Structures are given as C-alpha cells and as structure tokens.
Length: 305
Image 1 (cartoon, rainbow, N blue to C red):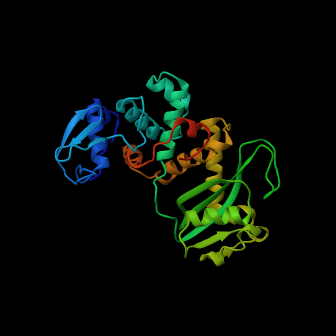
Image 2: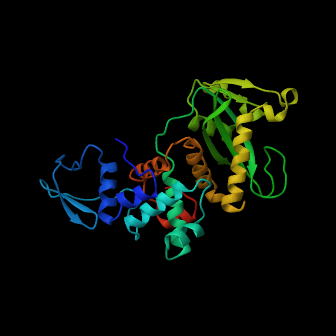
Image 3: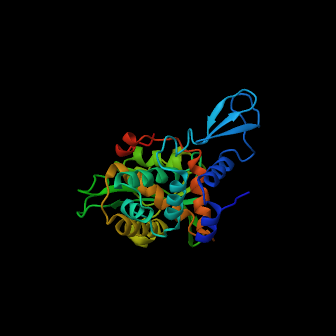
C-alpha cells in the first residue's frame, strides 16, 4: 500500500528522525517484510548505523547497500528533505537552490545529490510507450541554427516520443542522440516504444526502416499539413522542454549531463496530473532503493553506471 505525506506538515510529522527515515526505506526495500538474502529467515536484529543482522545465520545486511544512498556521507534525513524539496518544485531545481534551501555544506555535494536523484527518476524496466506514438527530433541549447541531420553549432539533438491520447499528450520519452541517422533513431525507438505500436513521423529518411522493426508507420508531409501539424504533441513537448531548460538551467548545460536533465523533465511531465506531490516523492524513493549506486567520479564524467 502506498503511504506518503501529502503536504509539508505531514512530511515533517512522518520523518522527524533518522530512524523514521530508515524504517520507511526498509518498507520500500522489503515491502513483504525483511527476508535474509542468505537463508530466507525473516527475523532480524537492528544493529544501528543502518545495519541489520539475521537471527538465524548471523548474516549482516546494510539497509543502504546497493541503493542510491550507498556509502553516502549525508544522513537519511538530509536525503529525504532533498527528495521532498526536489519533487515539490513544479519547474525543476538547481544545485545552488538545493544547497541554499537545505544548508548543504558545499555546492559540489548539492550537485551530486541532485544528479543522483535525477538518475533515480528513471525506473529500470519501466513500461514502454504503446498505441499510437509521435516521434520527432529537436535541437536544444546553443544559439546558432544548423541543418537537420548534420548537427548545429552549439546545439544538441534530442529525439522525443509522445503517446497520442485523443487530442491530449500521454506519456513521453526523450533522449540525447548524436545525429538523426537511422541507427540513432531506431535505437531510441526500440528502447522506448513497444513493438506493434503505430508511429507517426515526418518524411525524414532516418525513419525509413521502422516498419521492418515491427512498427506501424504513418508519414505526414509537412508541406501539405504545415510543419507544426505533422507531430503537434512532440512540438508542444519540445517547446515546454526548452522553456524548462531555460528556466532551470538558464539554457546552459554540459552535453554529457543532458540525458539526466531529460530524465528529470520526463519524470515530472509523466506525473503532471498527480493529485499530490507526495506521490512523486514516494516514486522517487521507491526507485532509489533499486537504483544502482554510482560513484562521484562516474557522475562527473556523465556515465550512468
């Protein structure tokens, strides 16, 4: 059963101590109750410092091992406050804002916390998009125009897929790709959209082979219907993404970290209709206990694992 705070007061009442945060993580990590990974026993001793010991085989387990919080020097209280603050900001957050709001000692630490939380916004094995799906690309960042498929100086190419939900936009996926070649576009499509779905694209040659991959394919001529009407949902999402990047990052970002920002935007967009921001907090922590820990050195190099 999902249990999460629905407002700031409930958050403060539910997580007043390190112990309350640890107990919540244990519930998320072992929803059916603790079970020893060695012998299957459910009884345990709490050893403190986030460690528990099986009463039968004496195997010791860390509540944080193998999670987003593995070997972190921050307390769980600080992590919970960070996750709550991040998910309660409607338009995204900056590392400087996180540092100032939570009183984190250094900008580097705040930036690392934010990058780790962004990684946890993507759930491993999440459902693929399905049904009818629009696909197109857009350039973000930089200030100079360029030719499609050949790159644009100072800009980065992002491919976007949006489910068609009547006149509305369903779920979305997006990825930074090196170019608009068939190889780059097809790789994204296979990773993001269930086979059998019907793709709607423009007439760009990079989409020529999608039918052979097991997708339906409708091609719309922009010269006939108008470029904005080829994939109108993608154009709307692209416009929102660019405004979000400008508002959150002032349009400046390191390309090696672009996918993390796209993941944050996707996480927020796909949960835009949630009645409570606390549900986003719950989902973020739920993902955090199954997210692989990533060392700082790999984070600054833009590596995912």
